[in-house]
Length: 177
Image (cartoon, rainbow, N blue to C red; front, side, top):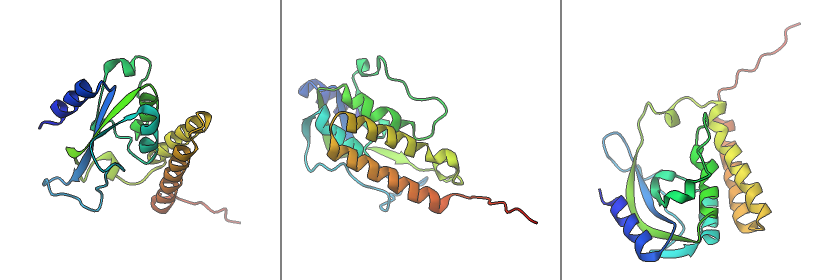
């Protein structure tokens, strides 16, 4: 209930361009889904440069819902139409435009996971859009000589590909003679 207030106060206090917090996954009955919850790799509230935070983004902290942005960050950035996991495509581009990022360790956002949501539906090729986003992020980070962050991003790409391959419902047709 206080997420926006807390993040706004941090942007104002720190002079940052983005404030970000952790999130907790909850099911439809508001029970914590401990197997899905993970935190940003920070141990205390802090302020870092946009370049430093790119490594956190490359480690999977891409969700837009845990961040409050100054509006000018999105002057020339738009979420891609028709993509799933669209946050992956814009998160690194938004952070790259920042001088400072305020990090709040506390989980202030509760992500409600519904059984009938797109992300819980049958696995399809469209679910692999995130891989495309992480590959674009990796190329971007390599171009910026941010090799540590690029390595983290490519590891996410590989993990998503493995998950996709394992869960994809492929119908293989064989030619009959």
